[in-house]
Amino acid sequence: MITPQKAIHYERFEFNKWKPFDAETIVETPVSLTVNGEVWLTFMCTPIDLEAMAVGFLYNEGVIEQMNEVEDVRVCEHGDNVDVWLNRSVEQPKSWRRTSGCTGGVTAVDLLAKPNVSFNGDRPKFQPEAIGGLVDKLFESQELYRETGGVHTSALSDGEKVLLSAEDIGRHNTLDKISGLCLTKNIWPETRILITTGRISSEMLQKAARLQAPILISRTSPSSLSIEMAERYGITLIGYARRQRFNVYANPQRVNLGK
Image 1 (cartoon, one colour):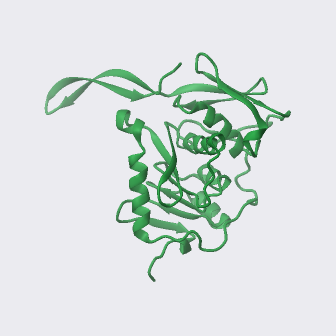
Image 2: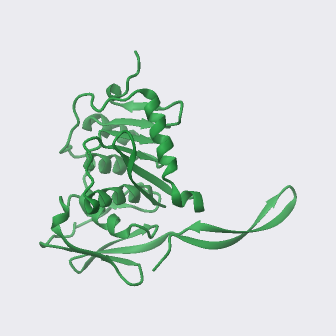
């Protein structure tokens, strides 16, 4: 099996001197997805939680709705392919569109289509300081990042604690892994908040909507299309979140702004 980190040696130049270092770096590797015996695509990913990533990807693409549609899911002996067997036949999308994901994500979802889910009202409601607290909890869940750096983390919270977290070199893969973990562990909290280290692009917003999370919080920026989509979906979109500050780009009604 492929491990998520790899030992490396490097040389650092600092203060006019060279110094040798031994460390670990994050692994990026191709892993194929095979559905009912047919190869669909190849992920570029970090080889951890691969079963969850495969199942979550199929869920986020709308191929499956529930875990009981999956007869079996397993990673091959060499760790470079995930086999998913469904209890019915499915047709592979005729074309995959490359997303803005940093490791070359793909989707067949029409991100400009009318959303089939919307979030109304102002619930759940949070005080501003609670947003910073959720970001702190995201940091606490970054186990692989503390060992290697160079990896994205996403977490699912019920507003009080982190229920699930996932790490990967691709930010979009982390949300596929979160969806897959929700399915395989049957964890579907009534309140769903997603916190991520990754930039919020359109496919990240779509995956959050698929998870029915009315609040999406990022350490960094959203794209223009993700803001438009958040407005249409009714998702509260928060970026550049830190302990004492954050920006609300869409649907601020779920944060008590004190105005």
